[in-house]
Length: 267
Image (cartoon, rainbow, N blue to C red; front, side, top):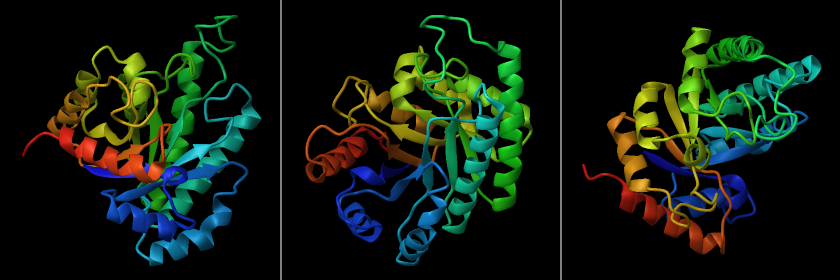
């Protein structure tokens, strides 16, 4: 397992500066943030230069307000176009892939009016169609698309790893895989370690944060159990920090690296 951090948390004015900090403090990758409106594509000169300098950028997390499961067809099409752009950029800089939730902040069955305007069967059809299209694009580019379950208050469609894995299998495309976010899993999975083992090889990216969505070690998640389950599942991908940070990142990030490595199972 390799440790990464999202770019906005790493000290440094440039990606090269941030990478130097990573190398000095136990991190092995930088997770990028993909701004909407195709602005991530506009960063290609910067990203190419960083790649030439040896910066490792395995993943990108989109930052937008609409996703592939949107109720509005035009917004769904735009989300698909933006995700394809993210995937193509990641392919160009030797990344592994890009992630997407089904939706975010669009609807929750836990809040009024409780019943969404689309049935579960229609949700499934929309998501499989979108993921199959993104999977085909990712396959052509030599990268993967990760579906991310979110908690019930942020997304009514995909909340647990088993749901994401089921949708990934339904596309029939190997480039459609699953990302697990420990914060969301803390809310939705009855047994996160079991969920990890059950997802198996389909789980190929992990985002880490604690129970309070701060840095690992700042809450009550059992990281030893989670990391042990990942090891049991043969996971060899990235653990990318996607969380808030309480304190000065220059001091917090080295502590996180030590905390994670201290909770890895002994070989």
